[in-house]
Length: 343
Image (cartoon, rainbow, N blue to C red):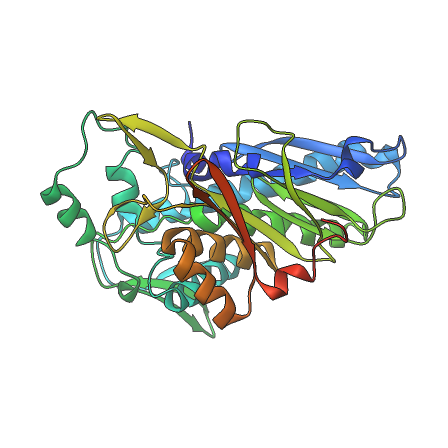
């Protein structure tokens, strides 16, 4: 089990559309494992002779991302930053600065619901590198962990010499797994562009992004699954229109503790796993990174607050809530623009 366990099961929220399941012979499909989840790349109009080279290039890119973001690898860029106990700015790559900047922006707009400094709480509840607890954490343990969190303690600095991260709380522990799948998915898209490939659908875990058309000459489509154990139960289908999409869900990645179901989605305000009715939040945005950040924040907020924020920010959002024995869906006006006719 590696650091992506917190979002591992969100990949099951997405099922690539039937266009993928009946991919014609001339289409190229590459796949593998990374960050504790799976990646998949579907290409159209690409010479089969390039398959091995592309597979290698993709895996190398994702391995590099893992080496940057992992909280499981002690020598990763992020792990080194988390171990540092001073307040001097620490050098990071431009990509690392970008993901933190986006996380801070979305964190502010969600009033802290999307908080990448929630790592101590994630670890306390057993969804990080630490083992799952034998008993529910005490109130004192939760308070102590919360005291080591807070977006106000983290800054991104840009100078002529490069990009830097700075913290003013020695024990601040940054966990980027809430946005890592989107980050890696965007990287795969940029890799395809550098390779001169214009027709692709790329995904890492539950984050997906597409450009161009599939092998049948149609725009890529993605199906959103119903929050059930059936992987073929489709809730809705969307035409991505060159956008990124990501889903955060609470209904599959959990464990039982003291007779209760413990969700991997932690509310930074309470320091506890969420217990509300919202079970799935899907967001479509210009980039997979942005979509991946918003879906987590909306999941933490719950149905009503998520709806209000989606309308205020004019986000393309699809929510699924559990009401009794039924699942009830809601979509923002912006999301409807991506919905395939007849769905």
